[in-house]
Length: 247
Image (cartoon, rainbow, N blue to C red):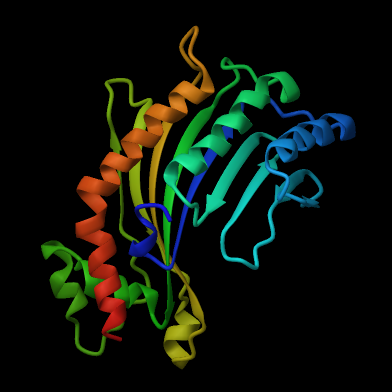
């Protein structure tokens, strides 16, 4: 399993290419593209249309480890859940991005944004917002608010986005997503749902001349890994896992 697999219940690596122009939606074009992906990964056999315009090809999800790829109106996506290695996931993303120019007429000029996302999901039955506040703290400025008598945390999803170049084209974001609402907090009735931590490295705008989507993806993936290793594992993922284990 990937180096990060033991840090959460589920770990995944996704790539998303957002385009300025709409991607082709003709039957023959879409099928040829996915047939080419399937030729490399024969186990990706489930093909379906979602929301009338989003086409998805994926492996069987029952094993808890699977690949998927999608073509939306203005977005090309690729993901692998619980990959055997990070390199295995990146190999899939390279294939998808290599095929895009020839099969979907995607040009490096037609790039709104390209991002690599490392995601970590924790299964938890309870108040996700309160769990995050307990595991990570809310910061000195909000300590008094969190200590209000009779108060219960109903919304807390810390995130931070940093620009890494002068033009603000290359950015990295560390964010959280809870799936608890006020009704659940009020009634005390919770389902076991996924609490997510995301690390997203993104580049905005058209690519530089003679630069490929694969080259940019490689750089973004390396950036995301550095952020996970230096800023997220010890600071967010492990404290969150420890707090959940005590519940």
